[in-house]
Length: 194
Image: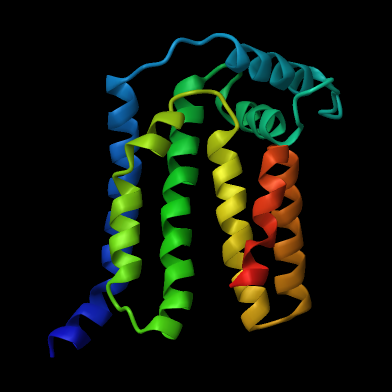
């Protein structure tokens, strides 16, 4: 009886935990504001070059393209330099990583029979202060984590249910993970081992 009731309420728990995760991240960065300098200024300058170009194209010698492009596109909607809006977007992306971890473990739990593991991982990730701190800076870490985790999830989905659509989504996330942060390229092979 209790298990059936919990199963029916599961999607509500997921939504509440996701929203709580976003709120926690915004609360956390309010208490630990970071100075805006160095790499953050470089990303912002690169985003400004993309933002101001008619075709949203610009090159940079050593900064990768996806994060500044995301900033430039987002700034088109919220106004250039609106850091609080970027922090909220990053809080949502980082909370989506928690959802993806939950989904990954739901897929893997079928092999191990561990019912509580996805929930425990989702809750622990939701209150993780290490990734939450990166929400409050204009750096590519949150987007990279989103694409790496998405690569692992979509790789598992593709391995379990091969299809053109799953393969295209997996390929997109692999490419974006590697392009957003070149060091992330090695993580793209993880689904092969799983």
